[in-house]
Each structure stands twice: as C-alpha cells, then as structure tokens.
Length: 176
Image (tube, rainbow, N blue to C red; front, side):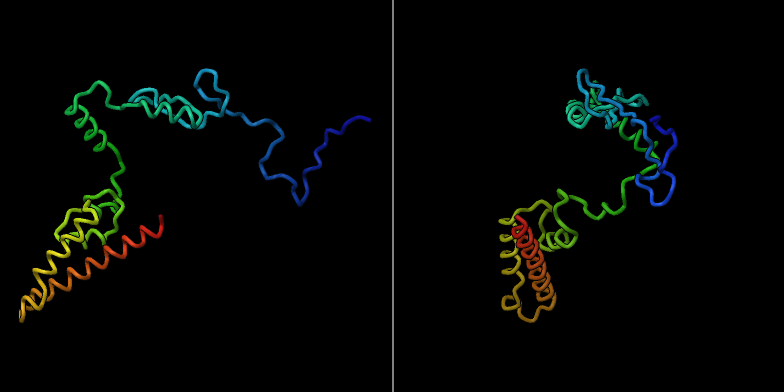
C-alpha cells in the first residue's frame, strides 16, 4: 500500500505545538575544537569586535576565566577606555543600587543606617558592632547624663540601631 503524502495534522485539537515542523532543527555546535555540544553562549573574539565565538557552557566558562579585556594596557589607559566606553553607552548604572554606597552588598539599607548610627563603617564585623554599642551606651546613658534630652535621644537611637543589627544577624544565622 502506498504511503499517503497528505498531512492529517490540520484539525483541532492539534497534537503538536504550533510552528513545530517535521524537519530537524539547526543547532550551532561549540567552536572549541573537538566539542560536539551545542554552542549557545557567545563570546567576543576581541574588544570592540562584532565577531563572536560560540561556545558550550563549559568552554564559555573556560574562555571567560582567562579573558582580560584590558590586556596590554596600563592602569591609566584601562581607566580611560572604561570611562570612554561607559560614556558612549546608552545605559547607565541602575538607580536602585545607588543607596548602598560602601559595603559588599550583603547588608540592607536599614543595616547600613544602623551602622552609621553606631559610627561604624559598612563592613564592620560583629565584634566591632558590640564594642561600639557598649561604648556609645555608656557615653549616652540617661543615668549618666541626667536631664540631657539630646543624650537620651542619642541613647535610644543607639539602642534601636543595635536591635536592627541583632535581628539581621539572627536572620542570617537562621538561613545557614
């Protein structure tokens, strides 16, 4: 019996996704010699060059590990190139990150404000926080400064800042 050339995939419901053809999909292979994995990660061949290598995930990671965009430039030349290219870009740094200032990005805005209230840097550790808290509490305690409203307000601000930092430390410990 002869095979029919007619497609019976025309009615509702469709048994395949729309646009799913019967032909094989073209897959770009990794540009690394001897690799047959799909090359779906572009990597620049050189700075400011539109040509790209196409690597698989493992070879893209290997290539990027050794990639140095500023290779062969002095520190001043690298800074000048970075500034020039940043100025040419239509994109700017996201405004939502401008609040963080110093620090490693692991602290919230409330924690940074609390550290500022304790007169500490953004990267202060727990021992420094405890020492600053103890020093400021002794300095501004209402029993020591009787009748001084400014010292009482400062004491309460120090206490609140320390509580914020302690709660944050407890949350971090619970996540571990």
